[in-house]
Image 1 (cartoon, rainbow, N blue to C red):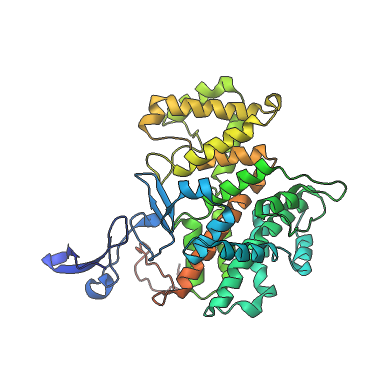
Image 2 (image 1 turned 90 degrees about the horizontal axis):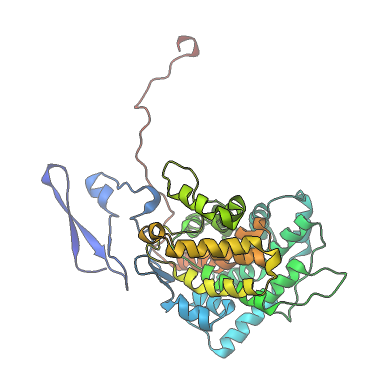
Length: 430
C-alpha cells in the first residue's frame, strides 16, 4: 500500500481519505473497505469491471498493451520454451523448477492419473448422451468423497496433494466422459506417456488395435493448455475463490469453477465459433455474413473476434495462430471445407477496415476451436479441454487464497430496488 490517498467528497461536502494500494505493475486500486463503516454507503459496480477482489501474485494482464504474464514471465516466452507441466509448477509454486524439481513434479502427476474404480462406476449412472461438462463437474465434486482424509486446507501438504490430484486426474475424468458419449470402453492411463500424449491415448485408443500418438497433436494440446492455464480473476476463477472462501472443500470449489466455465459467455466461445462457421457454410457466403455482422439491427454476431479484456490484440491468439495453420496444413484439404472457410474469414477480418477500426481481431477462441475440431475432438468436449488447461490456475488461486491470512468469506452487497416495508394482509383481504 502506498502513502497516497484518494479524497472522496461525500454528501454535505464531507471529505474522506481512502488509501491507495499499489501493485508491482498495473493501475492503482482505491481501498474502499472502510467506506460503509464510516460513510454508510456501498459502491456499485455490476460485473466488477472496476473492482479488485483480492491481492494475487499469480497472473498479470494489461488489456491495452496485449500483455499476459504468469508469475512475471511473458506468455510468449513460456509458449516458445516451456511445457504445460513446467508452467503448472510455475503457477503452483511461484518459480520455474530446477531439473530435479521438474522431474519429481512430473513423476508425481504421471503416477496419480488413475481413478478409484468406484469413480469409474459413477459414470455408469449418467445417460449415454450426458454433456461432458455435466459429468466433469459432478465427478470432480465427488472426489471429496474419495479423498476426504487429505482435505485439511490449513495443512500445506494437503494443499499440494489436492493440486496434484486435480491436475493428474482431470484428463482421466474428461476422457471417461468422452468414452461414455461414444459408447466405447474406458481406457486406462499410461505412466510412460507425457501429459498430453496420455490424454490423446485415453480419448482415442480402443482395445481392439494399437493407437499411435500424433506428436503434433500432443504439441498443439500442450500449447493450448499453456495459453489457457490462467487468466487472472475471470468468472470461473473468481467462482473458485468465492466458493473456497466459505471453507468449502477444494474439490467442491473446482466443481463450482467448472460449472461457471460451462457458461456460453465464458468457456463456450470456441464452441460458438464452430457453430458460426457451420452457419456461414461456404466461402461464398462470407461477405453476406460479414455485412450482417456490421449491421447493428441484425442479431448475427461473428464469434471469436475481439475480447473483453484485450482491446488491441490477444497475445494468446498471436501464438496459437501458427499452430493452427500447422495443424491445418497436415490435413487433406478435400475433407476440410470448414477450415478453408475459417482461414478465409480470418483474412477478411485482418484486412477489413471495419474490423480494424473496432479491433475485432481473431482471438484465442477462434483458433482453439478450429484446432480441437481438426484433432477430431467433438464440439461438446471443447469446454472440457478448456477446463483441463485452466485447472492448474484454479488450483493455484485456491491455494493462494487459503494461505492468505486476510482472506474473508466473499460477501458482495447490492442496491435494493424492491418494495419498502409492507404489512402482511390476511388472504381474504388481498
